[in-house]
Image (cartoon, rainbow, N blue to C red; front, side, top):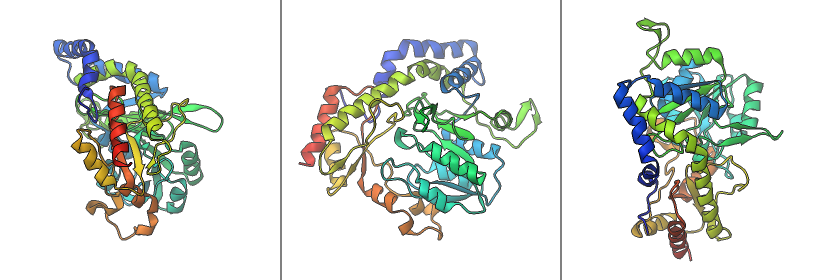
Length: 376
């Protein structure tokens, strides 16, 4: 059996090596390392794929979130609501801009931000909501947009884990995750569903005026060289990373289908076990793109299971072991433990198994049998 990886980028690369290498070589031959034709090609291709008017490439996903907030002219002290159960980058940029993060609990069913939690957290100082499409499952954007419209709030989608996923609306229509709010942000970190071979990110919007402002912000506030019209940053997607993404974008749906296929096999092995709650999803839908495959282990030793898997050479991880409201950098007297019952439960139960495009049946069988062996 091939060695099991949490994310097997090498095997994925091996299948596309010739095309990737040729694409990178084109950059080397033309010496257009910043804002070269590969970047413009990727921007246009991603706009078409997402069916969004504007894609603004940038240096990484954290920058994408920060620049999105800068573009909306949020002011110090403005309150921004986001989920307690997610990676720190989401709340990090809120704090960096001297905005006031307002953390709320998540929904037990999908681990995404709680709709009721959002409603309860709104105050006269609230200016924006940042839903995170966690683990590749899309948040309830229809409800979130309705709340935002009722309270005149911005919605900034953190789409770092769900590129290619769809949000389905009650009228049967679908839109790509990241394109529904006023602005969306994503990451092309190598392990993402659409990943490059370094750092990279992008911002999405259908708002022409906002897109224009964002394009200035990512480039030192310049629209014309040495003319600084807005306060900006230095955050550009380099041409080599764009060259990689140009090869991988046409394969994204195939990659996401491979992840869903692996999830189906995982679920079939675990379904009905009294100590395991699997991530439920409709196999005929394409809203869940499985950036992570995350189980909940109940009435059993989650940490013991993790060590058991590691001892057998099976990588696994806990995303996330400490809620944001308990992180030293973000502790606030406003937060009470009773405000976060779901998050506080999830951090004790979740464990993520290997999930990537190259998982084969032999590996999945070994992983699932190893989990069941411990939980017998």
